[in-house]
Amino acid sequence: MAHGRPVQDSLTLADLGRVYWPSTAKLAICRGLCAGLVWASIMSMGPAQASHVELPLISMPFIWAFLAVPMGLILQLAGMILPAVIGTWLMLLAALFVSTGDPLVYVINRFWPSAMNVADFRLFNFQPMIFVLLPD
Image (tube, rainbow, N blue to C red):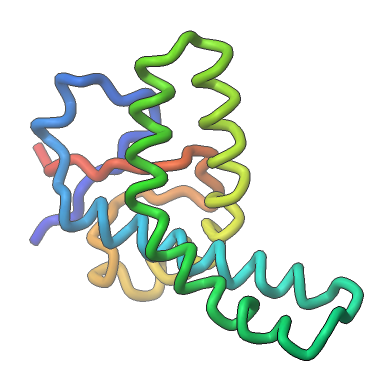
């Protein structure tokens, strides 16, 4: 399959018909997994608490990957529907948490382009959800 183009600007409701959902979901899960790895690494450098802390740190990438698709969809739609100030703040917070894994996804996409099927993925994408559009 040809590589899809990620929507880097705002998504409109008319664009939803052109979204390639398998690549969009795969990209969101990969971004969530990589962001979870980054946040687990950051949190593991903090002060040691109890010995039961390791399980949440180990499971964090998988939890983030599981939550990436629904969280991204909900926040993207909230950003489109809610007033500008509230929607912008919600999308800003979500993007902060998810986009930390983008450099890892960028490396994966550069070395194994068929794994993501995304053309022109940037090193840092400050969006909670990136929709991959079908190639023209």
